[in-house]
Each structure stands twice: as C-alpha cells, then as structure tokens.
Image (cartoon, rainbow, N blue to C red):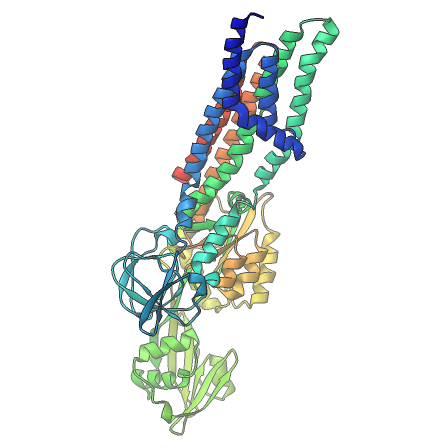
Amino acid sequence: MDVNDYVPLAAFIGGYLLLGGDIIIRAARNIARGRVFDENFLMSVATIGAFAIGEYPEAVGVMLFYQIGEYFQSKAVAKSRKSITALMDIRPDYANLLKDGQLIKVSPETVQTGNLIMVKPGEKIPLDGYVTEGRSMLDTAALTGESVPRSVDVSDEVLSGCVNQNGALTIEVSKTYGESTVSKIIDLVENAASKKAPTEKFITKFARYYTPAVVTLAALIAAAPPLITGGGWADWLHRGLIFLVISCPCALVISIPLSFFGGIGGASRRGILVKGGNCLEALANLDIAVFDKTGTLTKGVFAVSAVFPAEGFTKDGLLEAAACAETFSNHPIALSILREYGKPVDKSRLSKFSETAGKGVGITVNGSSILAGNIELLKDAGVSCEESQTTGTKVYVSVNGVFAGCIVISDEIKPDSRAAIPALKSKGVRKTVMLTGDNAQTSGTVAKELDIDEVYAGLLPGDKVAKLEALLTQKRPGGKLAFTGDGINDAPVLAMADIGVAMGGLGSDAAIEAADVVLMTDEPSKLAEAVDIARFTKRVVWQNIIFALGVKALFLVLGAFGVASMWEAVFADVGVAVLAVLNAARIIKTGK
C-alpha cells in the first residue's frame, strides 16, 4: 500500500470516528450490560465490516446519514414532547405566604392548609384554595385547555396551576402541595409513559426476537454461499453487511412509543389527561359508555324549580317552614331550599332537631312541629298527602301533622351533555347507559332528554358495581367499557371499568385517583374527543408498522440478492425511521 493511500484512509477513519464514535461506544456499553442486539450494534458491525472489505466511503456515508436521521428524529421527538413540557410549566416555583401582615416568599411544599397566600397579577396559583379577598380573571388553559379566562370572586374555589391575570387575590389554602391539583396532574403526566399500550409491548417483544434473527440471517448470507461455492467472500460479506443495515428496527422501536406519547400530549392540550398508552389504546375500542348522573351529566347544583303549597298555606309560609327544618343540614337539597328562602333563619326559635336516615328531618319552631323530607317520612308520621307527579326531587312538608305542600328540587342538565351522547353514538359507541342513585322518575326524564339507551336508578355504590359487572359481560369481542363519574362513591366503579373517566374540575380526589382518564373541563363531550384522538393515534401506529415492515421486507430481499447497495440500505433504515417519526409527530399537531 502506497504512503499516499494512507492519507485518504486516515481521513475516512477520522471522519468515521467523528460521526460514529458515540454509536460504537454505546454498542460496547450495551454489550457489556448484556444488551447486544440493538441498532448501535447493527450499525457498528455493518460499518466496521465495510471498512474491512475496503468500502471506506460507504462506511462513513452510512454513519453520516444515520446521524442526520437521528437529528431529524430527535427534532420530531422534541416537537412531540412540547405540549407535555408546556404542561410541566404549571409547576409553581414559590408561594407568597401572608404572615403577621408580611409577605414571605416560600416553597409551596411548606405551606399548610388554612394558611393565607397572596397571588399577584401574572403569577401562577401555587395551591388549591378559596378566595378570601380580591377579584380577578384566571387563565385556566394549562389545566382545561380552554382559552377563555374564568372570573373568580370572594368564596370561589381556585385551583393550582391557573394563572392570575389582573387582580391580586388572597387565598385560604385548602390542600397541601402534595394533594393539590397541579401536583396530581404533573404526577399523572410524568407516569403516563410508563403504562405501555399492548401494541407498544408487542413491538418491544418483536424487536427482542427480530434483531437476533436478522443478525443470524446476515451471517448466513455472508458465510454460507462462499463456503458452498468456495469463493466470492467479499461480495457476499458486502451483501450481509447491507442486510444488517436494512434490518435495524429503530423505525418501529422509536415511532410506536412516540405515537402514543404524541396522543397523550395532544389530549392534554385539550384538557384530557390520559394516564398511559394502554388507556389511549383502550379508548380507541370503546363499545359501551356508562355515565353517572349528578355532577357528570348534570351540573350537580340543586335549585328549587317549583313550590306547591297545600290549601291553607302560602308559598312563602311553605318555604319558611322547610327552611327552618333544613337549617342544620348540609345536604345539597337543604342548601338549595335555604338559598331559595333567601332570609336568615332565627335559630333561637328552633329546638328538637332530628334526622331520619334516607327520609328527611324534623324540628320544632316555637312549639310547632315541622317535618320535611320524602313522602315516606310524612306517611310514617301519619300525615295524609298525595304524591306529586312533577319531575324532580321532591321535599314534602308538614306542620303540626297537617300537609303543608311540596317543594321540587331539580338538578340542571349540563348543556354539553346534550352534545356528548350523539357524538359518542356517531363514533360507533353501541350502547349508552346511566347508573345513578337518584329516583327513577327524575333519572328517566334526564335519560330520555339526552337519548341514553338504558337507565338504572336508585342505586347504592354496591348496586352500581353489580350493574357494571353485568354490563361488562355485554361488550362485543375486543370492545371496551368506559364509566364516567365524579363522586367518591364512583371510585369502585371507575376502578372496575375497562376505562375509568373522572371529572377533574369538580370531581372528587378519590374518583380522579381511580380513573384512567381525567376530563379537566368537566365536559362529558370530551370523552368523544378523547375517542377521536385515540383512534387517530391507533391509525398512525398501524400506518407506521405496515410501512416500516413493508419497506424493510422489500429491501431485505433486494439486499440478500445483491440488488440494493449500502446507500439504499441507509434509506431503508434511516429514511423509513425519519418518515415514521414525522408521521407520528402529526398526532401532537392535530390530536384528533
């Protein structure tokens, strides 16, 4: 070999080490850890082999294009992570603690419940609590995905992670940092990637067996024909090396998890938190959608819708009697009656308060005995009354054993609920069901108005579990059942369903913990949007699988027969990987 030949060789070796040194080091480290067959190993063996047979430009070219491909892949991954990174920005850096009239900047983790904090305009709310002073507009986009600011005033609840826009707020902390909304959301998102979808698990398992198999085939292509024919070692070794480069499974290994990550990120931008790729893939196969009523399909805020005084009583007199009876109760129905009455009750006139579980309350007002509750309460007391046929929750009232009238309490249907059920049915959801503890008449009216297929009313938490068990047996093969609820009593059903969906804005902590999906805007129609995102993600995943395997299969055959060169091998590996990753990145952009 002439001295002048060493100059280009040295240049090729220098370029190769500059471009591929990190790949060779990673391959060596992985081999030392027992992880032999990965893309680093394949690229290292193929390029070192190319050097061995004198194909220096090809060896350097493969590393160059591989690194270019890696760069574009990393950019696509960064783009797909962008919304998740933005979500992590809701983590508060500090809290302004009000202590002895002074503002002290402290870590949110050190603030206790009951402490007062001040949030200035432009600052993030660091902890959940209630406004005690001030009025402002809050940017809730980081939590709900909604761009319209929300107005808050004294006594309103505020959630950590929102941004205070224009007025200073004094807030009484209701939850420590570990229990706050922002902490729970960050925990959900950070752990989402660890819960792999069945397709992800399949690809991981596939790569575990696929890579050793193609390395063995490459070795056979390089060695078997020369051994049989007795020559042509360089040509067949070259074919084997091309086969190795083509066979690298990085297009699948990178793009499939990225697709699910993109789906989770796209959903989070719309106020839908999905706890893992497994939950996202399950949503794509939604067959039966089951809903709680109060707080899920309805607003969960009771209000008096009608007052029917009996003969001899006035509307105001009936409301006053009911308000006196309900004064010491914290039940939402009692609070709605007190709001409707709208006057302070003189508690010095009240005595002998009693409560009958599941029926109602009784009290004595200046010697007069008052009962307020369901019709069974009055009948048990020997009061003669007729049952009202008006839709709603009814409170019957008697004064000194005489029927005084009936007050009807209604829970208003969320406007969004009217769009949710048709949207789900348009996406092929076969059956919609309502499970509720409310009475059959009220529940039936709500179900009819929303076009829900089946309704089961008057259920205790244990009854809901039994009904859900029965519904789980009615799924079509491969179909999934989702239960959407918001209360503490929904937690067992949320955990049992294939997909538990919790209302994140108003829902209980227990429901959010048990759920697989959290709807931060409390809008049931977000479930249909989540199904859209899940199905789009699934389509992209299968596009990538078919495209990557199809192209690789074609080039593996061409490489084995000596038709494909090392440059085509680079496209079959790096090019396919880049295209698959860019396809996966579409999910984060469209999210549906």
